[in-house]
Image (cartoon, rainbow, N blue to C red; front, side, top):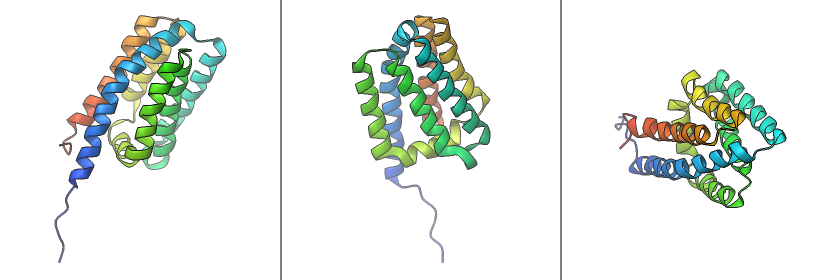
Length: 163
């Protein structure tokens, strides 16, 4: 005899926490990206480009083959963008958010990424951030980053199994 399938309330709570962390990270990361656009070095930009390429390759392999590689490369990409702001306080706040995700919410974070954070449209959100960094356009970097993190939070909140 089988019991019915249920998603635990703890799972929904973790997803709510991820949305809240994405909301926090939106403002912090947008500010860091804006600064990075005007303070980043060519060496930092080259490293950011290499990380984006690594993320794109993992994205192309899909969630079945490259879920953790894709998620980890995205976290690393935005950590390096934050470091390129040359403001250690941004780096500290982003590290705190990432630590919370990695230590407490990693499983839920990975499941959400597999469900809604792969594909060309998502990669274009990231590409817009890099384009603004290349152009050294602080306001475009701020806007593109804000859009990227707001859309990620919206996709998570809009999922049918989200409570």
